[in-house]
Length: 116
Image 1 (cartoon, rainbow, N blue to C red):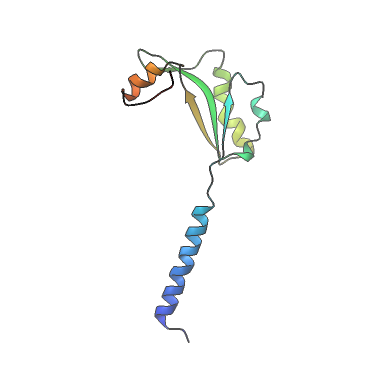
Image 2 (image 1 turned 30 degrees about the horizontal axis):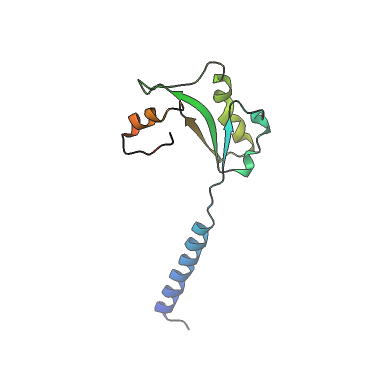
């Protein structure tokens, strides 16, 4: 008969294997969809991804307020609901940028390094 210590050691070993193997199996598979893309949102196979990024919202370089062009608002408002139909656990993110490195430096401070 096994001793309580060996049973405890075996249990800890099984827990280690369970958590070690489960954490080593986690992958982030991100995709990027630009509103100017020719691919309609319903055609995105979101089952292939863990995260989908929707681009672009704009940031005002003076006030740092985020805005979405009126012509694109319809796409941004339906993006998450449509991609979640095929993959309810998907994480959707919004890409924000105005194309000016000075804006990012103003938000993040001069320590950030950006392409010029």
